Image (tube, rainbow, N blue to C red; front, top):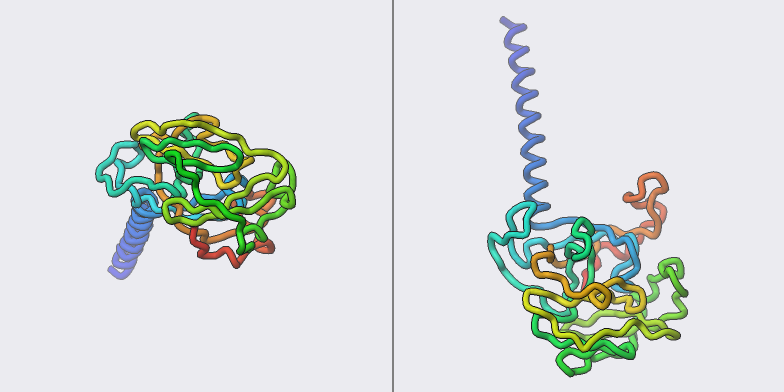
Length: 247
């Protein structure tokens, strides 16, 4: 009797452990699908707002709830606004995820020329950045072409949001427009205006491709581990970036 009872207890413990594990996985997947998802910044297209190897959280509930693994809305809550940083499926390869800033919403007339942005005929406010903290975090190795000293740090103010942009001192960034953003689409640009693959090259982002709004940096490092490239090298962690809000 004693041996039989002990065997039953072991089965019960094993079953409870497996059930708890499955429940934990389901909870994690639900959070990832519905609320938050983590991404790693792989390039310098959003410098100086986002640095290479910034690990960020994205609010997937910001614009609504979709049927899992589809583009079908269960509930629409809000729409992306000018100035917001969004995550979306790259229109030319939807297996790839991009992050850019919303510059134009449906119906907006966009013109970008001589390093200046115009929306519906109005010049977007731009001034040289007085606070150099964002630019100070940028390194020469973050640029595929040129160096940090070759770039000027500006502040743009769009729809009440103030954010940093980088522009080359010696070469005009690619211009675009005038262009009217079609319905159910968004015109996006990277903050690193000379080095961003964005709507100036491949057009607007369909609304159905938008996945969420960038929230904050939760981990950041200058280098990753040589063998496991998605993990930070603990010796190069940028502690000052932790919980840095994305504006």
